[in-house]
Image 1: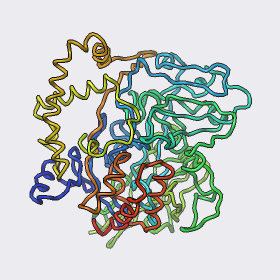
Image 2: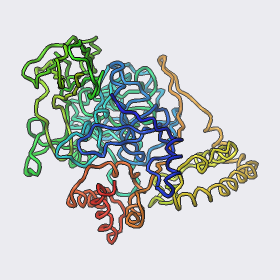
Image 3: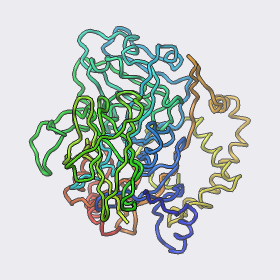
Length: 406
Length: 178
């Protein structure tokens, strides 16, 4: 299981004191440390507490990159707001938001530019849906060869019940004009340095108007934590988190394709199956990252546990289909030669995590490698070979955990 | 805040409002009253400690300024600032949204250790803390060079050209250091 060390802040500080001139390697507010299972390391991370957040794996403090401790995913399909991962691109993030003055502007290729208050938005018709929010680079730390970027294990994802208004209805308040091709989203965060590209993302107009893309003001029945985008966040069900713009305060309707850096240069994937290329390969076409792909995880062990030979071992976990529902989750203990079905838990909607459970009979000796494989409702199954690309995007290989028999 | 003071931002991207400044000073003053200043609990290293020590009389002076200046400020900006600090909310359709006012923790650590870290500590901490860099896998010189180039050319990091080789050297040798 996860090796949360007993190192508390105070005991660390006293040991640092004994070592004398050693530089501070953990910030003063870290609450201990944790080891991630990354090939070749570095694998140690601090646990940290940020405002409105419980213990999180600290990948970077400024701008914050906070990973959900994996054991949280075993507690249910909804990730608690205070342990939902956070990822920010730029360090200028407002730490105060006044709900009485906040405005969401809708402008560009529209008949009637509007500036909506939160009071305006709370009077509009509402929708609610459960959806997985996953970073494009979730599990990047497991890529081999390793790649530069945030070295996440599997915790740059979460599932919440989102409440808000249809983006389509928000756009209709301004009246989208003919000739519109895309809609661009911007939040209150800003680069530290002048001239650096402000973080903005866009969706094709038809996607933006599909009735599911949402401007959310609540997450699991509560207002969003500031680090998850308070007061408004774009929800793009089935698509990677990069599109789920936080602290959304500006919507620009475009009559030409978006050429901004975050669409035209960053967050692009090879236009190949599984976004897969050979290390060092060049010359392939790229497209903006888009829909998610199926994944599944064993959650009641992270591997390394011992079980008694011959015992019946309960296994459970979570899965998601990507941009559609989970059709089935299967388990293999023979390197994928045979697969057994698991029981699926309650269906919270096609974009949600879904729990699965089963049990296996432990062999007589040695090791068991447990693999979980999700097949989504479009018939797409997780691959047995890992993908690779230089950005570390879209990992969805079948994951394994080892159990040792005693 | 001490590390940020150590590495001033190239510009105030969003100058703190009067209310924010006042609030920050009030927080410092409260910390002092509660004997909860950073020096009592934080890890101390070299010039960081020096800054933390100098923070105390500074904060005391600011605190005194708040009290002495209160009568003057209350007539104009001060009243608005204090009013803005009051928690407020918006309700509709059975949902209530409340204003949020938080303070992110001090980003903490510098790049270790010694003279070879000087260039990276002087140039890189304005935009991001050290943590993600220190947890990168072993990357080649070409990969680190391209990361530093991206920071300078695309993200407009004001890194002086003469400092680039020392920064890349430091990054290439990260694995040996840890």
